[in-house]
Length: 292
Length: 292
Image (cartoon, rainbow over all chains, first blue to last red; front, side):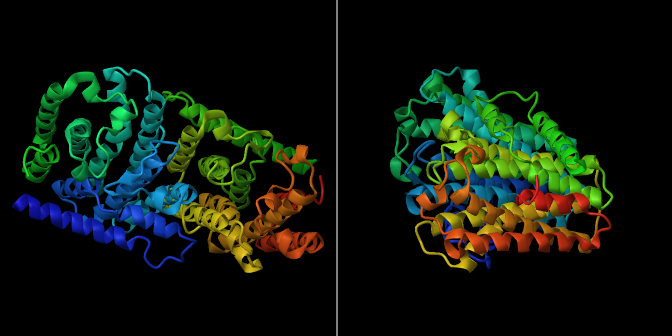
């Protein structure tokens, strides 16, 4: 109960901040509508919650972490909009709703992604009101690196290039480390940076988030085969249909299940430098579906 | 002669820096090739030269301005890649060469744009090695604002929405102010910020760059009607073909010619707060084709 209440409170705090980001701006055609359509379409808000919770764990305040948390979620959202485009994964549904380009058209969807990515840096810079300038610069450096060609964008390029090809396990691991791991990892790290934590704390939450991100991705691959369409919000078997190599096609469902358990345990162990990281520990369990 | 030599030297300095940006990075499929294809495809490099020259005008050093100058050019390049996409302007040629998606495919072109935009912030953050952190944060705030939904991306959204519709002169002015004016203006302003110049200098170069950007855009509209295909590097009449409202369709070629002259004069007048802004004065004349 304690966990669920805290999770819901964090999520509400994030949602409230996201709603405020573009409020009062002069509209330019339907650009802001398209940006808000995807930004406010729900989702678990795992990344910004990681930022908030890692900041708290290091003794920082919510206000210091919130701009950075929202920036990460904006970057995550832009990446979903662009990934769904007809020239990419060509997805028509996302979280049970029509994807951005199905509602606003391709041109606006490309621009909504561009706008969210750029505005993410504007939003992150808002942390300058609460944090020393050097700390904001460090946070931005880590964020740009994780989101850019050496991180998330590079992972998506590998993903596109790998479609229809037989990938090895190291290929798929590298791809996921960049495509989904880099942003989840930096989400956690930015919380520590916001709180003024040191390298030991940064390294601990990085390890936690890396393992957790990988576990979550493998569980996602399992659900693509075994899950039910309504709870997923997208068609079952979409990975198989596009001939993608996934952890499941490489290792089978049973071994993937064991791998998820091992990674979740390792993720929680990485938190041992902290006195009472109960929330992040429970989060890891809940995210891979062991409880709740 | 003095002007031409200085212009060429500036251009070479910018090109050299741009060539170094992704050197030595681990390749992810053909992502870096696609990014470099457009980034190193030539062009006049007006924006980064403005940054360098405005920095010098305020007593700053090249090394302080160069990261910011390159970041602006990277953002300009990403915007061209995305604007050329089939779902946007659907252009096959840019500067006489096949556009990015014609060479690398649409998916990689979208990602190359995303990668350049994100890496632009990484590059701009490199200024932190030479400038006080507060100054870098101010530069990044202005850059993100100018490039984002309240600036360049908003302008492109207005441009897309306006296609096939009859626009008024204020519509077209607002569109160009955002789509091309915002980035040119911030290019100049970042130079002043890099040099530690004050609001008077920032305001002066903003006015100069705004007028110059508008003059250059109107001249571009004129050339789309009267120019020759080889020197433009793109088909003549492409604006007319896509039924775009331009300054020329609204005011006619002759009045547009007079407007370009008036704006160029106003641009140079805006520089009166500086002691000897000879280079920027000549640049304005050269850019709109009065000399050279």
